[in-house]
Image 1 (cartoon, one colour):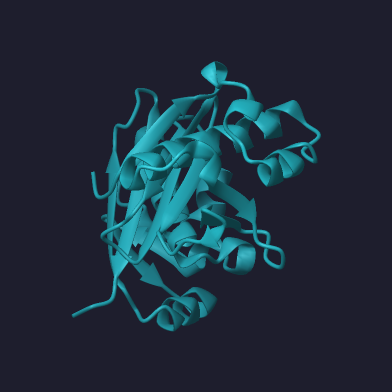
Image 2 (cartoon, rainbow, N blue to C red):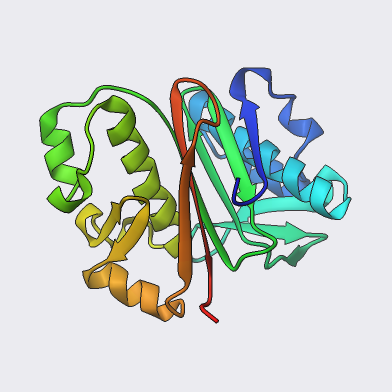
Length: 210
């Protein structure tokens, strides 16, 4: 594994009041759909476990709150913004988080392996990426692209063709290339592993080239 990762089962989560700070509970209460609440809480549980083990601090002193302007998750430790790189993902009853204390950037994605129609493949993958076939390959390829997009922090600012993963190597085009350059063109290492049966999991870490 390229960095520490924690996986949690969303069906076995403890009550939110046992884990969240007052500010987190306030945001948690604004999430109206139970599914969204469970996924949100699961990602925070996974991340808090990693951070607590890394720096030996109680759960409620670790906060993951949306940034006031961007809405992106922001990690705070003891009320202060942390620079520890992290990423969160969830899929079909599971949530995962990663921290990257030895890297500048990290992105992860977890997806349940599933069959998808050819139109989906054509819509989201450039022909150069399709070096294999089958449900496992395509799901893994999707997680690789998502992990790299999360590392870049672009969200919906780029389309799928602007980030291409070929044999576990990312390539950037258009807006994605500009965002990649703004980060200092880090050297990105990308890997996919069997974190859990029936799922594909990818992690991308990045560091400035020496």
